[in-house]
Image 1 (tube, helix red, strand yellow):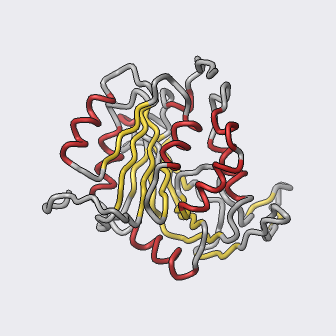
Image 2 (spheres, one colour; image 1 turned 180 degrees about the horizontal axis):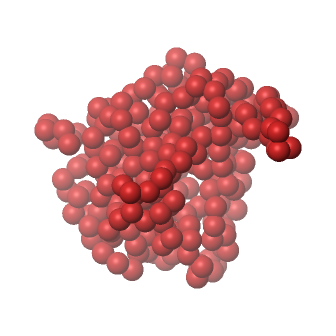
Image 3 (cartoon, rainbow, N blue to C red; image 1 turned 90 degrees about the vertical axis):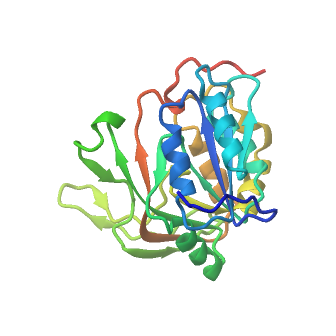
Length: 261
């Protein structure tokens, strides 16, 4: 945690958008990993998806301690796709780093390193490496974690072709008949730095469809396809920047999604 008081800039470099649902027991780690970054010129957008625990009261308390935190409250349960979308549409930063409530950023220089790369190459999207725990928080230190990156290259440049909707990739045949070495994106929004104007343009492009009624798993995939048909450039870098904890009770695993009228 930085000793100096946090200050909200009118022109933040980075916006971090986090949809929240009944995550009081875990969200503090995600927020602290942002506050520990060496880039202070940022905003933290927390979208509470009508939590039934004390998530909302908790984030309202920490909001008083960090003016960079903006809280958006859904009037009813709307789902991850909607929650992340309205958070993104309200963002003021040049870049957005999507985050889930069970994620955390790793080294303190993630924002600075990745945005420097985005600035230098004028990339619409910069994807970086992540690692994932497939078990609960209590087991995390005693269990194996795995690399979730889809590229076997330390530094790999892939230019997106929006008119074709395709990526150039290298195909490597494995002995068992499968393939590896594809230079492709992951379907997660987290682990990416996205130019805000591109992300917002993509969301406006598919309009009300972002308020999906029934999608209860992997909702972000809907946004990914629209986003990568809006962006014109993409870069994958070999830096590890995010740690994801795969929780069985996360918002994306709910099975009782309320219909949205």
